[in-house]
Image 1 (tube, one colour):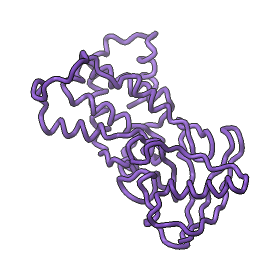
Image 2: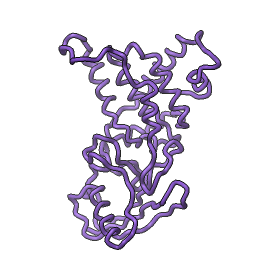
Image 3: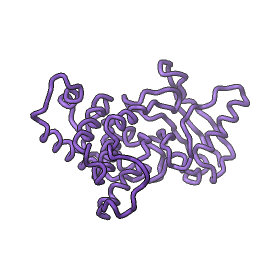
Length: 266
């Protein structure tokens, strides 16, 4: 089949960008979207033109590297699917597609469809860890975990940090991502030692990274390739409020985390 692509091209963060049209003939319905872009890039290289920059790694929906807007939807039209898992059979002959990078203040554009999503990494660094002594894996029944909590924790752990939730949110909020990371560790026995500080520090870092506030619109859940539920945001807010209340007497004006918390909301 034949497709018409309008792709955002921008040489650098400071250069002026624009949509560029590409007519793509002989697209196989068995191609993934990224494979189709590979074919487009091969043609551009043969013509001596600059290939389209986009991110990818595993191409199995695991790494979270891929991600851009297709006709205004993060990762495209299929629910529970990253761009690398989106196949061209979703489209029909003659379709016109508009492909743009994720748009968010916290995701500065690097080139074409590639953006800098290291802000999400910094949120994880701020509190996404546990201090339980490591070593050989314990026997499975040594630390009992209720089945319901184990399933909720593993559902949250499925987050691949692709940033689609941020791109889809009108406020460019990272609440679904942050909530998933806080929920993952906060529901497990091993994560209780840092539970209060984890919530405070990760929410504070999200504020530092100039992500917007959550207003429960739900677009984040709709585009998440791992279909993480918006309930993780409620758990994040609950953990944050409990931690802030328990530690209210320890507030210090010179504490950068407390200062960040005083300037923003979860």
